[in-house]
Length: 281
Image (cartoon, rainbow, N blue to C red; front, side, top):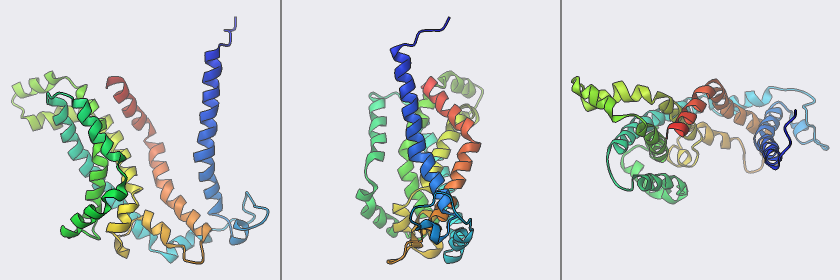
C-alpha cells in the first residue's frame, strides 16, 4: 500500500528542486561555461549569435596564461603562503580552543560569538593599520607577512570550530594521563589531538581555501612581481583597452581546479569532520 502524499513531502520536494536548480544555476553552470570559454577562439567568444560549444577547440588560451605572466611562480607562491597560513592557524587555533574548552568561565559562548563576529568585519576597514604593521615589521613582499595576515583573518573560524570538538573530549582522559606522569602539553598532543584529528583536518582544508582565495591583502602587501599570488596575477592579463576573456577563463580554471580536486578527493573526511562536530557539539 502506497503512503499518501502529504503537504510536508510536497514542500520538501519543492525545496530539494529549488536548491538543486540554485546549485546548478549559480555554481555548476558558470564554472562549465568558463571551462568552455577557455577552449574558444576569439571569434567564438564574440560571435553573434553566441556559440555555446566551441567551433574549434584551442589551447592557445592556456599557453598565453603562462607566456604572458609567470603564472607558475604565482601558483607556487599561493601554495606556500596558504600552507604557512594553514599551519599557523591550526596550531594556534588548536591551543586556543583547548584552553577555552578547559577553562571554566561564564558566558563562554558569548565570547566565542564575539570572536566569530570579527570575521564579519569588512577587510577594507583594517587595510591601513595592517599595512602599517606589516611595513614596520619589514614583512612587505614576503611570504611570512601575508601568511601572518591570513592567519589573523582565519583564526576566529579555527577557534570557533575546534572549541566545539574539544568540549566533547572527557577531561578524565587527560587526568588519567597526568596520573601516569604526562604533562599538560603531552596529554594535549598525544591524546587529545588524535581524538579531534577529523576536525583538525576539516578546518585545515577550510583555512587553506580561504588563504588561497585571499585577494585584497595579497594585492596590497605583496605587489612585487616575484611575490604575487594567483588571485592577483589573474587580474594582470587585462589592459585598459583589451580584456582577453579566453586567457582569463583559462587562468580561472587553473586557479579553481586544484581546489575542486582537493575537495573531491577529501570530501568524505571533510563531511565526516563536520558531521561529527554537529552531532557531538
